[in-house]
Length: 574
Figure: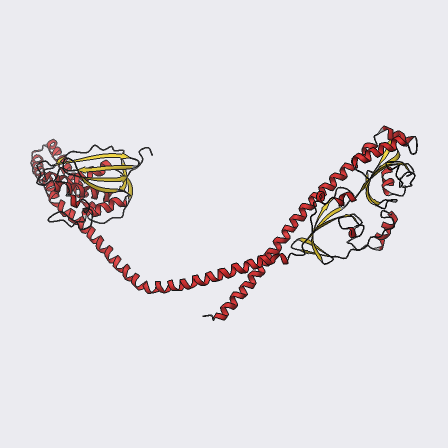
């Protein structure tokens, strides 16, 4: 047996193992929830940004088909007030930052901010890639810093054609501050951050100011030279943001300034850019503390309950062990009683045969004597050559022999015990077989038999041998009960309903004494002065109960007794 200290050590080690499992499971669950949150935010942010940029991208396309705009660019006018006001109205209605028109040389000849101090009119933007690519026939979406305002913006540009010839470029600028200012539309909650990273690894948009126009990737000399030549960020050179990346359980994590984030990415429709949402998971380990404390409490409760159950089980085990010998002795007595009961049942059957033997002797002797007479007559007919009369005698002898066989066959039902075999037995056949067996005794007792009218379609679910044994016993009892009576009449009644058949045996004897009605089915209880073991009715009731039926008795109002058998029967329609 383990000592108490060893048991405590096992309990403590098991607690540590289970706490480790609970901690790992809880942290994994925490990360999965954070991933779902980041994915939801990234999806909504992507949808919002893509929808807004798609709306803005349609405006330059519509303006390229505007006839006043085409005429204005084709006639090489400059600073036309009507065009400038038209561009200002569209800028105000759309929410864009600026809308302006460049001629074929890249000079600004019309602008929505024509009245502002920092107007674009007259500016040379021919070096801008969004001008060169648009004038070459592309529909351009381009990120860059404004030359005058130094504000970050997304530029949508498209060429203006006159007679299939490019004569200028229309440009719409969207200030990216609008995507960073409204946190509710962006659906970024406290502890979450986002950024949009361009193809050159520079962060164009972010809710974190220190991340804007910087990068999470180390740029080599070639990449920095390309950024300088494009002048998309003017003279600004992106700085590397201190961080580290790692992957765990298929999830991407990023550590920035001592904070740990889970990262989820979505590809944007424009700018060849990627949207990344970061959800702060720095407190993932600390968040498991309540779960661990709760588990420790539950664990200690289970240990306490288990200890109590084990102590109780030990007491029960001792009690069971102390009663084991008593159980064995009780089983031995039970088996002995069952054997004695079986012997008594068989004795009752043999007693029943004994009671019927006198009647059978008379019934068998009569046909045997008749057979002898016919045999003597047959010899004389044979000697005289009267073969036709001889044949008639032989047929009568054959009939008498068959009758003797039938009587003996009926008697054989009771000589041995048998295994119960429930079948659908016609009630008509069972009743008339029982009457046939008792026929000699009924005749000897001078009983007037009123044969029952039984529908042959009624089939009871019983064991044939056992059921007929009950019927024989009840009919024999009724015959014996009427001995000494002036009126000796045996009658029957049959009915069926609700899946059960009801069969009654009625006699005109003295009936059952009132104080005996409750006891007649008890073992060894008998009202017979002699030749009665008191088991016949008890065994009959047990047999009927085994068929899920009932056996009851009552006195008739006009005198005599009635025994009622109710057993299940087969549905006639099945």
